[in-house]
Amino acid sequence: MSQKLPKPTNFIEEIIVRDIKEGKHGGRVHTRFPPEPNGYLHIGHVKSIVLNFGLAEKYGGLTNLRFDDTNPSKEEQEYVDAIRRDVRWLGYDWGDREYFASDYFEDLYAMAIRLIKAGLAYVDDSTPEEIAQHKGSPTQPGTPTPYRFRTIEENLDLFHRMRNGEFPDGAKILRAKISLDSPNMHMRDPILYRIKHEHHHRTGDKWCIYPMYDFAHGQCDALESITHSLCTLEFMPHRPLYNWFIKKLDLFPSRQIEFARLNLTYTLMSKRKLLQLVQDGHVNGWDDPRMMTVSGLRRRGYTPSALREFARRVGIAKRDNMIDMALLEFVIREELNKTARRVMVVTDPIKLTITNYPDDKEEWLTIENNPEDKDAGTRQVPFSRQLYIEREDFMENPPKKWFRLSPGGMARLKGAYIVRVDSVIKDDKGSVSELLCTYFPDSKSGQDTSGIKVRGVLHWVSVPHAVEAEVRLYDRLFKVEDVAAAAAERPIEDLLNPDSLIIIPNAKMEPSLREAGPGVHYQFMRKGYFTLDPDTTPGKKVFNRTVTLKDTWAKISRKASS
RNA sequence: UGGCCCAUGGUGUAAUCGGUAACACAGCAGAUUUUGGUUCUGUCGUUCUAGGUUCGAGUCCUAGUGGGCCAACCA
Image (cartoon, rainbow, N blue to C red):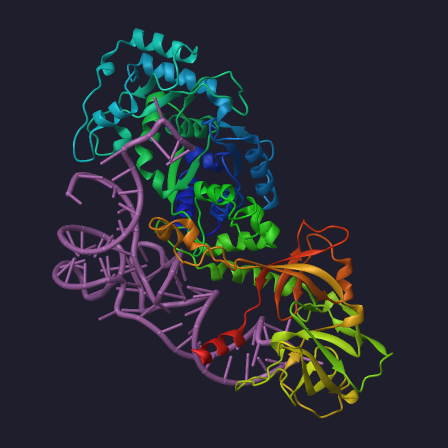
């Protein structure tokens, strides 16, 4: 069994490989993904999901899905459902191993009783302020509250009565009796249970006392025989406490291992702040395509495989990090470049009329669906005298290195002919409305004998055949790189990118898009990758831009103008 | 300044028992291209500092510096 172990690629895998070789837990690997159902999963959770499930896959183990639902005031069934859906969508299966911390409330209660009986826990009537006071500070030892000296019998009685609902919220808590002077504040008599007369989304009104994270998480790991309990760095100071409970309660020795959480440029990762964005209406819900939630990314057009690949590339370490959003964009482009059908869509149209093309003629041209994938085949696209092209593909006074259209200039229409601009028609406001062009009949794509060489190739849509649809162009939600840092000093409103969503109400599309269905990814040539939005109705299609194509020209012209 | 953790190019992650810095993204330069896409090539580091151990240190030791976390009846 320890013969052919896969090569470890990070420090956690090294630990696991060592454990397997030493025969720890009989070489078993069992992880868990333990979200609190108080919000939607985001890209930071993806890192954790891929880590936990990936580890089990790689080393022949299992992964549980466990909802850490110990705080009824924040948790809802809606979130449980969303989390299940998102983990499944990401491609992971937890089989029948779906658990809830609330499933263990009775076990945890029994453990608390054991602790009290062992003289290791007591009921404290102090107010939160008093407790904070008595706790001291990292440099100053704490002092006992008067309640620390209660007898076991008294504690047992009081704790029973806490459970029975005899006391109001906040009147009493159960604390562990560990230390008053540990340099680790988490060891200074941590709170185990608090009173909350609140309805729990699963246990209803059965309980009015709820265990704290520290008294629940480790024990749940133990009850599920989790071998490697992975969490983020900020839980490191909790580890001594995690181990204290294992020792004092004689539990299965799960091991807590901490790794650095994901940080992404131009985005926020805390569920609290994401919730704020939703509640304040800065976005249209948890699944707004600008949100870095799993549901937002899905709607935006990200694929499970790209997200998994992203998590893999990000790696696992203990060092604080800030991942460049460009990496996320890279993985989705990398995948969609290979898989997405190419189509032509004009978002900001001007008319191009070919004066020497017969008025009543139309041609159906054959264009390949994906140059990266010959198996994707070809499709027919109608060509006629009147076309739409992109406004930005014509310039009256072009800069150097411009190889699109300009007065007298030539370019190829993708899959069709080379055209030359003869004259420019403007509207009364002076902006270009139409280009009158000549085409070269012998320059037809694939059978070009014209001998004309052009650099520019433009996408186009035939006016009489065009299909209209709404297109939503998304960009990053925030305009600063380190949003969390900036948000500490300025209100979030100041950090939002005002152009994070641009709606094109009636883009012109080639007719093949009439057949577009949900879940299919398209490359709108020279524009980016798009997918159908659920807002689509029978009467009107709505497309979301997943990501733009890399735009070297934008870079060149930006540099030139600055 | 009490404790714990971290420190490798712009950003991440690697580097078997210490053996002479790798991969990816981004950037820049060029080639290819009927998407200014793709693809390909080149380029970008005195491994935080100072000592020490060693034939040899990114890896070990010491000190310093910088950063992060911890004193919620949140997780």
